[in-house]
Image 1 (cartoon, rainbow, N blue to C red):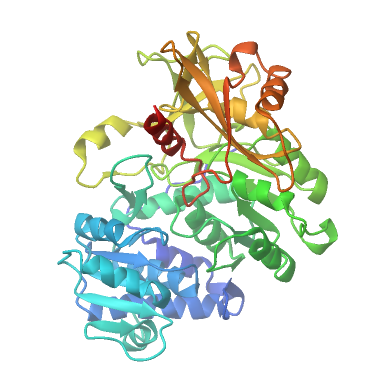
Image 2: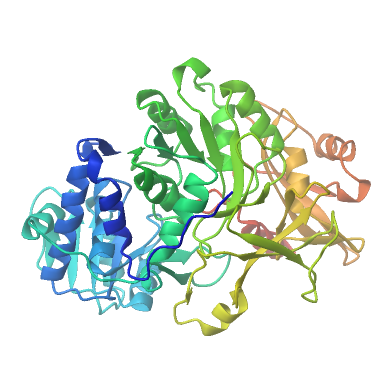
Length: 521
């Protein structure tokens, strides 16, 4: 396939979206919990937001914290900041005041755009010794606000009228996302105006084949790199309509949107798909309008993909992306789905597997570290030169994931670098064991870590969540795995728990399980 041309050197992504949809002013762009916004209305609000931010005194390249639930105001705030050349720092809505205090101080954010429901948390964060915030703009707040606080609707009103975009460049810092990381403080990942363009072109159009005829809905929230592409960058680049949901993506909340709005494309994560398939409220095929589904965050177990396709008659396109690369760079493709694998490199990206000494692995079925080369790589981690150098190595970005590649060129996930286990001198992928465990009809979820036995040797331990009303013994679990995997891979230890620790994106936090295990020792 011919790759798209690069954006011009002078490029503003918000203006690009406005221009791309100039002929669709009356069409619905966004649908959230309280109403809709047309493409023309969205363009007007983007310009007004940009002008309003400028009137508050915000200057080019200054940072603003974006702490909002998914809504039309989130989209307008993000794109309004881009339009003004101000840098939005989009943050997870599920964190603590201490987390936000770190992010404010790290970014030196001059203002905060916040949902009314999160204002108390932000106020607590500011009270933790932050000094940079000069203005707080509050979305959908009823009643009066304290000094230096502004209603979002008043910000838009103050900026109403013609407004020109900032003369930004494709390669200049445009926005930040904080990487979740497994340990330590999050890292402020700095992305460019052009990076948004590239992910929309290479994955949104190139792989998903989105068009103006689609209605899309993402369970992953806008503050995640995955959700940002799913529900903003990709659909708005082609004139599609977007369903936005403020609440948590529980199976019931997700089902309601799938049936009420009839999206044609749904984006989720493996744990979400598993939870939906296990729900007694799972809709019938004739109650939804899905043509395609996407999954990322963690590798999709083959069983979940196959059961979903059987139920709804559409494929789940499993892929892997990262905050650092902004979206998916390795993926299955429509009509070329091999469940249990993460597919092949997205056209426009290159991937490599490297050994422990940095050598490129050219063979097959060998586990190596995954590296990516592509046009959407972040510029850096803010104020973290050492980690920047470790991750962004010239044209290549280190993913931190381990993969293998089969004879047909399909890549299979083998865990994070720090999750891999060596049992009897042989690498064992926790994910492989987990994928086998969840094939058992009584098991809902599983996570596998290494546990040091009495002899000081590392053995696999499985944490197992059973489906409601089910029961199993440790020996049942061990026997099930032994029948399906090499003998050295079965879990020597099994612990039944009610819930696995996860990130907000649904990734299993194996490090928390390791910490719990270490405390028992």
